[in-house]
Image (cartoon, rainbow, N blue to C red; front, side, top):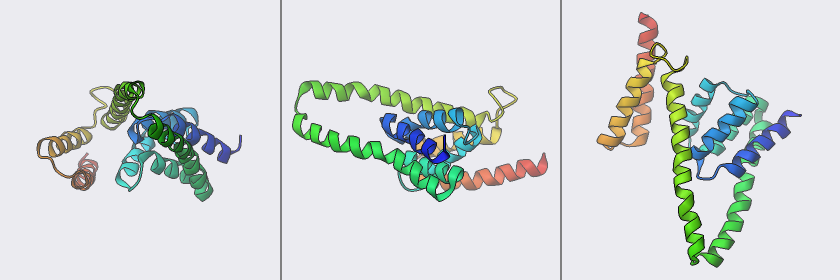
Length: 189
């Protein structure tokens, strides 16, 4: 199969089945990009998530653009992004009509309530998978634990949860501190 149709089809599926936003899409993106097509390694996928998180816009769309340009240049970026957003455009248009028409029905409210825990589970699964990939880049074992990644993770959690610092500030601090720590560990080991 030609690469551009593969990109479109893969990201159309991601756009169609990633209910709950970008974090919920991460397992689907990984399944397509890393597992099914080997367009990125697991480490490159973790880097993709980091870059997509830092850049403005939805994570899934940023990821589609990044993968598309990496795999097939500018045409790949356009095709992958279009595949990712097309289902949303169509689904949101239909849902806006349905919501406007039947928003006061109890059954409709029950369906929305039932979807919430599923979305939380998808986000938690994606977050756990990324955390394990960052902390254990060589495989899950005590010898494979990256102490710098663990330190950065714990520091970021403290800054975000305990001291309520801005996520943007935490990203920049973590990036700078991480670069310095990785440089120092490479230089002295």
